[in-house]
Image 1 (cartoon, rainbow, N blue to C red):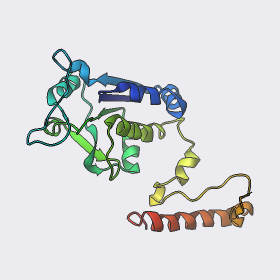
Image 2 (image 1 turned 30 degrees about the vertical axis):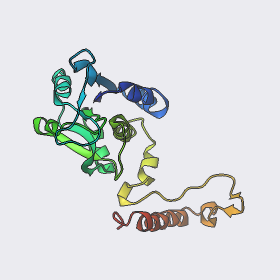
Image 3 (image 1 turned 90 degrees about the horizontal axis):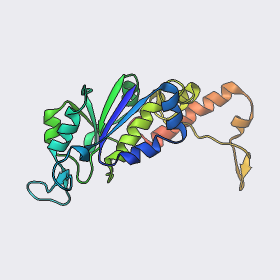
Image 4 (image 1 turned 90 degrees about the vertical axis):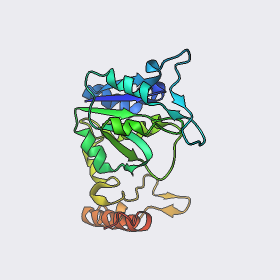
Length: 221
């Protein structure tokens, strides 16, 4: 798999992907991570990539040309161009599963107030939102997407863990506990200490359903 990211601060992504689980998955699966600094394609003395938005408004907007030149420097532009943005559709676990099966992925990290909307007109974009909140760095949003894709690769996260985690089968993950069995007068549910596998599985399923109805009724069965 080849993951290409166009951004203004590639070191943010580079650092995260060079430690812990992402590093191991990248190395063991031969994932090629290509980081392209959009500023390298800007013109002028200061290699400026942003300008004030037409119509007024706070902040600065990333310009079309530096992004377009960065994209056109690629031998092949992978489609679609994944663009994290608060005004996009919700990025789901099913999307991570879809992109995890692709041979190449191309992401564009916005910054400041975002990117000039004409990028969406020029290129085939999949604009996705991580949730109802705003980040100051599109690199962070891209990292969320990259991580969700990497962990689904071969030799990534244990397949047994993937089966029970949140959003699998449309449910949140069940509550989990570890030693000691009693901490500050709070005890682990007796069923988890019983050794009765069938009852334990029933408890986990019921707990998942209750949590989903309580915290995410929008995805509850």
